[in-house]
Length: 349
Ligand SMILES: Nc1ncnc2c1ncn2[C@@H]1O[C@H](COP(=O)(O)OP(=O)(O)OP(=O)(O)O)[C@@H](O)[C@H]1O
Ligand SMILES: [Mg+2]
Image (cartoon, rainbow, N blue to C red; front, side):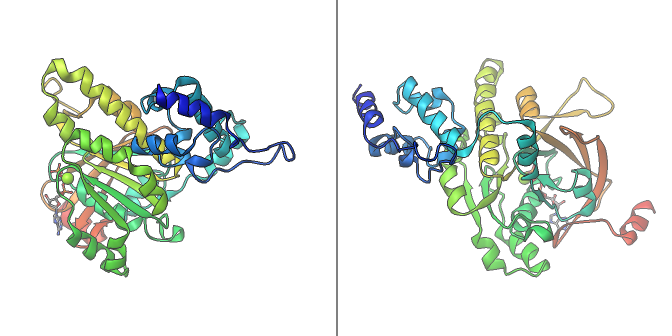
């Protein structure tokens, strides 16, 4: 009650900016307090729930905001103002084309793999890598966390990486080796990888909910969840918990895609596979998480081993517009690389 009264007061206060002189001028709110109707008390409540930026409010749902104690009407107004500020409203198709032009691509370190993915991983969407234990999913995440820091003409996004690790498999040694191999200063590269270990699924969800400020302050251009599903898988056992798990995973993934869109960043998740004993041929394994994960991930790539050695096969399983296909790459001491002709000869022997 008290919160709502406070909000009404803030809404009717004098903080509403004058817009008469320049009706066509685009507003741009820097801080959430700059949004009409968000006073200091509301701002604090919103921040507590992870809404640190105008971007996060623009992509929030009314329900999420009412959970912070804001009433429905107020929530709708704040969201509308934030959207307006960022021009996240109805757009014409030509503007959509312009938005698409903002999509940037992040190189994996392998030309073959980049080609399979249409030139690298796309910003504004989620790319999922799934495959069995030890196939190289985490190594690929490390490589991306290094590559994202490269300038755009070298395949990077000139930004930092946010690395949410659920299995405690992040290894700074890999970062040092990978950075050194491409002539970068390892300590500088390590500085731009913001790391957090998620101890359980609730913690993982919370970390992402609080991520927007970190993303903005550090120019994060790559958000990694390695792995997306391991905690969910071990905590939600049995059929009776399935619906709850899927619902949580769903909102977690939506949060991720919204962050990726708001900050024009790449989002990468890894996923394990489970056996599909009912399918003997083709792909007898399936990614954990079922339909929710497969529908929300925009690009899905399945990694598998070849007989022995460091060579891996990546299969593009689904993409909004790219054809299915396969490419090979290898894992070396220096990271993800293309296969050389010598490797090919060895492989065929
Ligand atoms: N220096 C190296 N050169 C080549 N391959 C290596 C090297 N170091 C590790 N590997 C390979 O990388 C694999 C580990 O990869 P990674 O940790 O990325 O797997 P993952 O797919 O993340 O597995 P999990 O599902 O357990 O998380 C090892 O099994 C090994 O085959
Ligand atoms: Mg791993």
